[in-house]
Image (cartoon, rainbow, N blue to C red; front, side, top):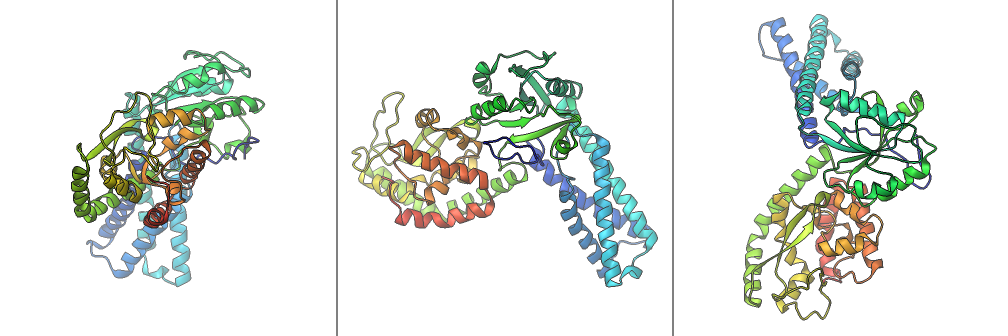
Length: 478
């Protein structure tokens, strides 16, 4: 496994390159595989016996097959991304996985002495028919997605670092295979360069890299450098620490079997992921479903309370019930966060955002109750339903605060790698309210980064359970 001293060890890139609809396609493909296996079994049964009525034993065997496929197929990488992977490799892996399912079934049947209850001819026909149908399903999907990407839809924009043979090969592979949906917009020259990359512009040296990698349209940064350029690789990682882009390594060591085993192939070129979000792919779908479900249930349950709070805000002082303020969301995109207004209407000096303090005269008496109980955050459930926020995630800070602390705290902007949340790990650990010192903000950010690295549905549920207790016994929100 390749590693860089001073940085976490690189993990195998087991999931596909980021795609807008990758998670939905992944789930649809798994469902399609299950339906294909079932349809093939029913078709063979109909041909053999002349009807679709199946026995309990036959149904049990079919259910067992489906469960085995759902376990074995992902284990051998059937649902791994195929942007750039050779067609024959994918089909070979598919048949190997399907064969493994059948072998396990046969061994189980032999152990339970039930082999005589199944026709060998019918079982063999089912194996061949289902395998062919699964193969056809994938070939059609590859053709459709490849055609869509070749037309410029769902294209990933890439900045290459390094003028090397590896870089030239990856550029040529992306150009020759438009169906992969990868556009290398340019490259950054480094002291370790070997060649001038043709067909794409040089966008400057490492001095210009920091500016180039902050281009809003950029999706990924690929490092195409030899292993001796360790210092340059470290520099790239440091300068992308606060940029919400995926960083990948295109190692310049073709022919080394050790590395090929741990890399995703892209047009025959090994690519290693250096940094990416944990909440992506089917995990992102799971979190999106969790957010909508929890937000919908809470809105139904809390609707009477929210109505009373709205009346209280209206009576507390003149002004609107809902306070809107710009915040940074996923990938740094701005959105309007909603809160119950807790302060008297006032003018904020341009370019500044003053945090509420314990003796803040702007806060109304009712607003102080809202803020100390965090009930002012309840309208953000609508932000969750809109897709701007999650129920659980890093709290969205004011944009001006992001500018201030983003320049002073390494990794601060990595918080934008996931959607901001109504509650979060930092809040249940006591880091709520005013952050008047850099140390307090640093502690909050550390919790946010820990959450992003270790996210799971279970962690979200644990934070939701702990949130009411943290509000009751916690201090810091004024």
